[in-house]
Length: 319
Image 1 (cartoon, rainbow, N blue to C red):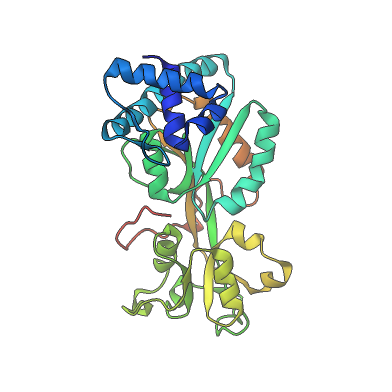
Image 2 (spheres, rainbow, N blue to C red):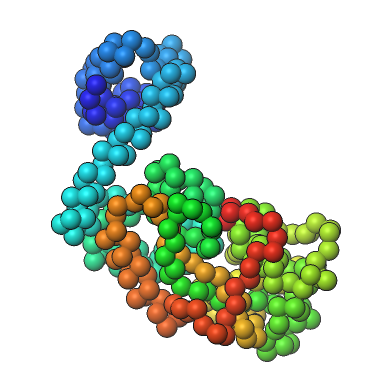
């Protein structure tokens, strides 16, 4: 059994086609097929059911593929250890990012980081919080950008910044005339929310005065902050946004941004990774890059004039 054979098995499992798998691994199709057949003969089992179209894994094949992923991931750690010792940032770095952080933060630092570290290849995936945690545990991603704290025993959290929350209140809403607002003034009946499964939704709900929260279902919710802004502009209510997202709005919309009175509600955004992660140099340089860019825009440290909307609802790690 060789590592290259396991690589070929994973390629066929992913593409479900020997020809395409061979192209992706830069070998001829006969060479790839021969190596997989050699492995199957050595193990005395069939990894793939070649009678199906597309090709499917056998039951034992699924187990072998899962174990192969673990083996190859562990083998690559040797290269990571060497690169860390040399202080080199090379190779692929896969980062899972929650939907309410990705559109604003990634464009701010992505190009600069790639310019500073041209041999480091950033792979960005939009994932919800629970998917990021699972990806870190299964080693399918290297790092995550998420709202913390998560209270996960084996997940390390490095705080990047504290992002204030702001209200978006169009002229048709009764609160628009106010210069600033208090969280207790938020009435859930008129607040447009992200759909269930987003932790920012829970952050907003926890800002609302409990007496304003009814058991009636929210009439309008969405998976997109931009959609919430559009719905608010069309007279369906108001919404709450992260500050960086609000700053990206068109100029004509910014007149509808209302700031909260102090203490300002904020969310804590962190770089997270599994405790077994060996890529310390990447973590340090990514944090340095991000904080260098956002310095002066939002809080890098906990301040006395900010608060965090703690989860009073049943905890859902899903954003």
